[in-house]
Amino acid sequence: MKFKHMLALLSAAAMSLALSGGAFAQQTVKIGGIFPLSGNAASAGIHAKAAIEVAMDIINNDHPELKDFPLAKGAGLSGLGGAKVEVVFADNQGSPATGQNQALRLITEEKVVALTGAYQSGITLTVSAIAEKYGIPFVNGESVAAGLTDRGFKWFFRTTPIATDFAKVYADFLADMKAAGAKSDSIALVHDNTEYGTSVASTLTAVFKEKGIASIIDVAYPANATDVQSQVLQLKEKKPDVLLMISYTSDAILFAKTMQSQDYKPPMLLADDAGYSDPSFLKAVGKISQGAFNRSSWSVGPAGSVTALIAKMYKDKSGDDMDDTAARQMTGFLVLMEAINRAGSTDPAKIQAALKATDLKPEQLMIGYKGVKFDDKGQNILASGVIIQLQDGENYVTVWPKSNAEKPPVMPYKGW
Image (cartoon, rainbow, N blue to C red; front, top):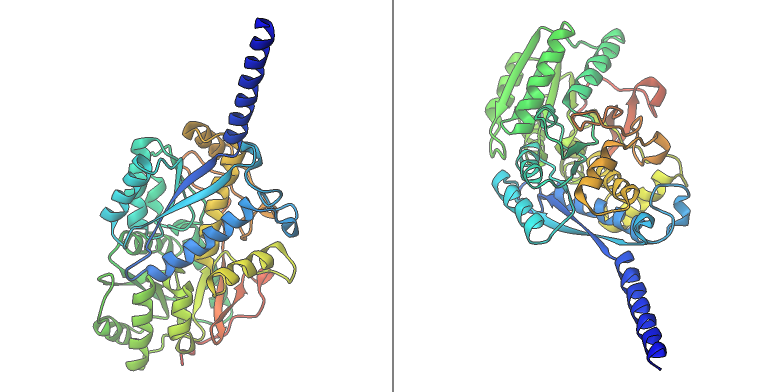
């Protein structure tokens, strides 16, 4: 009788252990997402949130229509027994200090196992410092200030092309345009005074000078400006061949309106993504910014393709077409989740090791990189980009390089 009783107890214990093991297998993997959900960059933050929510849908639910796209088959993370992913979003309010405080809260109170964000390079700078201090993996998909991966950090990984990559893209693009008859001997770099604006302008200046472009005009302005008339008048006076805009959304909109009111049209306007990719910029001033060139790594692709299907999911979620920034943010998040799935663990050190071992191929991505593979600084060495142009109302088309072009580039800048 005692033996039978002992067997019953052992059987009950085994069942309890199995149930608890099953429950553990179905645990929730909690990630922190820090973005500007209010303030002047709120549009970018809201679209980033929508992009990550689409990625969560892809991971947490079965999507056979996405075929072999990573994490789309089955529901949840297969490497963690079908665990679902939850993202706790935090508003950085466009403030480095607020972003830092939110990172601290997410790590110490919400107990997130990794972080993503934070759009503005200056906020990514402070948020990643907190992640580094606490030994929490941070995967950034969209901040391009070169110095972010030059700090010797061990927990920071970045998937996007950065300022040095795009400087080379711009230089090659301008060389091709010059060969086709366009002038590019003088370039005005218009940028805000944030970490993003100043660092990108500095990087571009160095690369352009190496390429033999000696006439660089630096036009700085305060971030979230309310009046840029003096800067536009300076541009009218200097008459640069190329106007290269390094601006977040509200500033980009203000510049477009001021250029129209001052009747200033540069021969060529080339934008460094950011505000010029934001759907709210296109809605507000797309029709008076015709002919603007921009950088991108995103393309919807042919009907029925994985990228087209994901783009539709995003539009159904957000109400807007996928832009390059949202696509790069989604890519960063998916790379993080692929590493966690491959690690089969929520232990930060194991996630870090999996990120270091990442070697994704182009067909495993929803963006036009040559792949994802991190160097010892945490920078993706396979990131790449193209040049797009606003040619049809509020729509960009790929115009360079020629092998990727949907349409040829149109010159000069039309504006309105």
